[in-house]
Length: 129
Image (tube, rainbow, N blue to C red; front, side, top):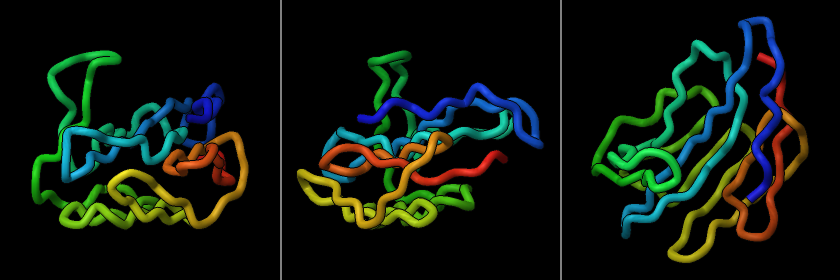
């Protein structure tokens, strides 16, 4: 995995914080990190899209699929919780298979890290909010 983006800055909406969006897999109890991004500190971060974080805290916590759920409330994410095989984040899109995640577009920046790629990690050019 790539390192998380540096969220030690303040944008027009105030200080930033790191938001890590996880997506569960429907066929087992595994999950993957879809994207790491900087958001305003007051904004809600959906830590487990289409699922719930387990009761374990810290490194032992898991993102568990909960069945049909409304799409994530995130204007940069395209995700259908009833079919988690296709994922979009801004200009990135992934196809999620049984053993690998494939990324179809890559660029670089410090504000957002798109993490789904099976070979290396690439980052998306981001903006200060």
